[in-house]
Length: 153
Ligand SMILES: [Zn+2]
Ligand SMILES: [Zn+2]
Image (cartoon, rainbow, N blue to C red; front, side):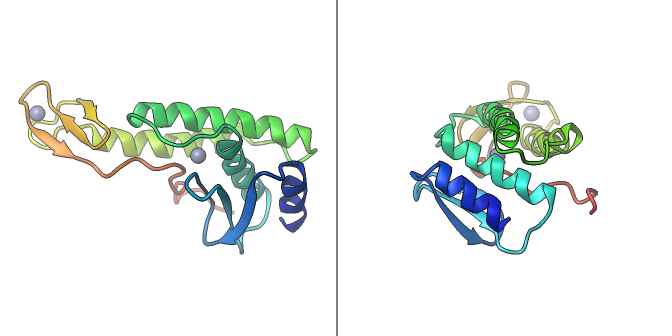
């Protein structure tokens, strides 16, 4: 991890890499935060994924579906970085699991609490049911939800 972080910060001097509690890209501060304790291929992939958000200058999104698009784009870019730096190739199953975690989460948000109809987001923080007109608020989407618990090792 140390080496990968060093390589990346040399390669992309405009980004700052900071050890923290987990992996995320902080657009307001311009920091790629990585987990101090994480190790192994998955940790490297997470780091490449967050670095990709930074390099693609992902900042905000109008709705949840744009968020999914950005997630996909960041993974595609991360694959490129992995081969560019001779790092372990990103496992397609891992990538799909990460995206599924998002999809499940988004799916829960968009189901009407009153009648169960799947609805469209009306603003960044609100949904409105086209069947019964119920409106409900959601917390803003965020990048990089934690991975599914069923993933082990
Ligand atoms: Zn409804
Ligand atoms: Zn992400």
